[in-house]
Length: 203
Image 1: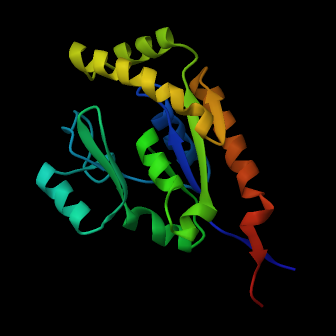
Image 2: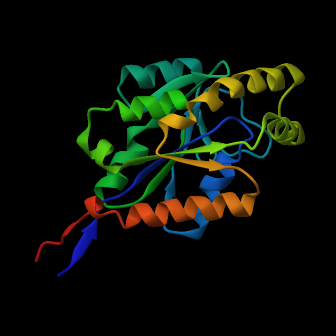
């Protein structure tokens, strides 16, 4: 008997500075996993590469992509627009590849409400919860990528975002990069062994 497994669509959320991007990148480097590249209208930061870190779009380009039905999900976060292209996800799931997405709670909710049975079958969501707000403040301050006004906005939004963790199948309380990655990989390992994801391979 030969079994095949359908791809996993793992959505990872958490406030800015929680370490969700680090966890996603670490997992993609450790195991066969595709980490999606999101679209955004925010400014490109020093050291970032278009098509690798984000697809950087103008407001007009983003609006046109919405009109064309190109997005699997999209939302406005911290005054900027973010979205995931269907082309980044659907072909890979169909091929049995595991995909991880870094999404805000709005985007995660859109996927939970998605009518596509392939998305619903593959979906698992994980929330990275900071140990406390003081720890989150320290992490954001050390990034030095935001102005003071942007930092305060992200901290205010973080309080709201942190209320969403009970809606997720899994919650990882952040401690260290190594511990968070180990916890996340354990979740993915368990999901890969879920019986509902397995089916008999055609002879």
